[in-house]
Image (cartoon, rainbow, N blue to C red; front, top):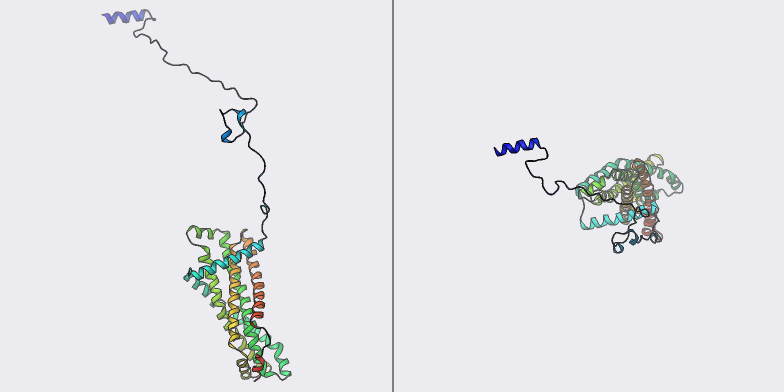
Length: 334
């Protein structure tokens, strides 16, 4: 009955509540903080950490804007030919270190040997045959008119062994093999395949450069010997059929004139030429940039520089090997 009377009292008087009101507010009013912008310093410049105090703009010290001191060669870029020449020297040193320490990829080396050797045999022998016959036409008739037909074989043998065979073989290799090396490595460089090899843990010098250099150094002496034999045979055949000088006289004169040093010097020349061709072509290939146009420019430049290097090395080696007066033709005349 008491609860019923309270309910009637609350309905008749709305100000009367069943539950008493608390003495504290249920929701605290939010306090708004007004931040006044600084008219003088909208953006405070950064200052040294030691000079910051109380985050006040007036206490910050602006950083010095003086430019750093410039060195003598800070903006100098070396010319590209000089840069590539130095790259070739560095690459040659790296290859020599790999060979001396035995870090050679044998399978890739055999593949490059097959490419440089048997792949270049046909064009090298054909070139040597026609060079020998052209050389025979120039002087056999003059020697025969002077009565020196017994020295024709000796002159042919000496010219082919000392100069023509190694130089002709190197020129053919530079045009065929050197251009291929430069184009392949240049394409791999611009397409970032060499970077992929580095990511996989393989050095491009070990996998790409060293096998090509070894293949050229080992294959060119064999090609030079074959070119010498084919050139001498073609010259003897032409002298016998056109100028009437017997093949037996030519071969006997060549046997008397040749010395072991003549053949050995030819082998040394061909090895040096092979090193020049392979190192220059690989260096020009791995320093290629600029897409397909850069690959074409590197290939052309590699062949030209290789030919110039061949002729310079031929002069230096000939001056070193054959000094003073010779007596080989004296033995060739019997």
